[in-house]
Image (cartoon, rainbow, N blue to C red; front, side):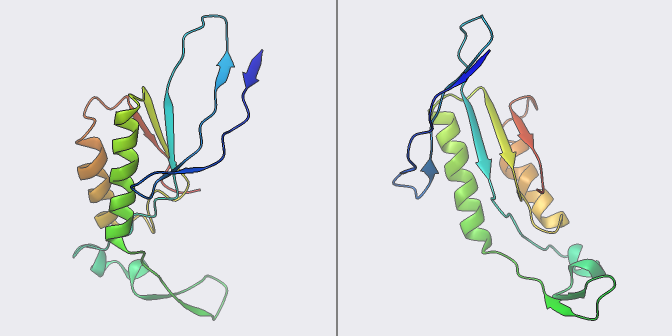
Length: 136
């Protein structure tokens, strides 16, 4: 049987991070686990190698459509600040697991993947503390 408490109202921290806490009771062990989920970080960065990739140019055409759309790259400093604040929060609450979901990176650029490597995998080198779903 799984019991879930009602999530708390969002709490804004001094860092700008918003949190919602709730408890899930599952199983009979009585062991508690602290899990932190970070979502929609939108780490977008295009490095020199990406500039050679035609799918990452500033404009692109969708298949089957003549519409040309501008690719919008989020503010990298904001995205990295949000990532760092989220990871610092996870460390402060001693999270056993960090799950990063929903648009962790934009456009799967090499630059964004390099930032994920530098900011996340090097911070938690054991490889078992963080799970990432790069898109939706």
